[in-house]
Image (cartoon, rainbow, N blue to C red; front, side, top):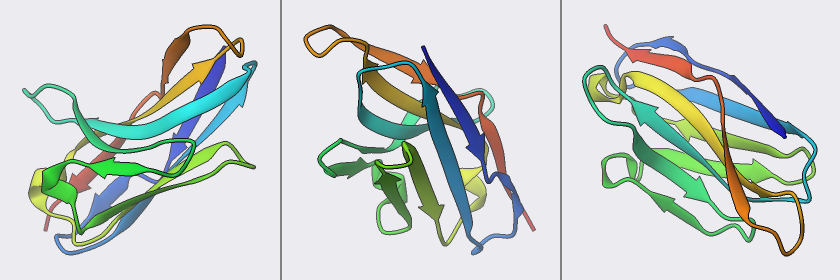
Length: 121
């Protein structure tokens, strides 16, 4: 099993910045992709940003140029630097990790508990 601990959410004014962190721990063979999703009230959960084990990234169009995802493989931690925040970025942000128990086994998903990000003046 993989446990994820998120931190860094909070209340920020429009134009401000926040940095989210998500640390993975537990029993697994490898961690492959790591990412962040978000869910606003009344909306479906959506991908915000994702980074592969090789460092390839992809972002939702709505956050390109404002958010940066990175990872520290030695610490099994993924970060999301959020700049120029807008009220429409308000949501619960969830960390997601794709991992394997065995080298040739299937991939599994693990989710964090979610952290609230509120952008408001």
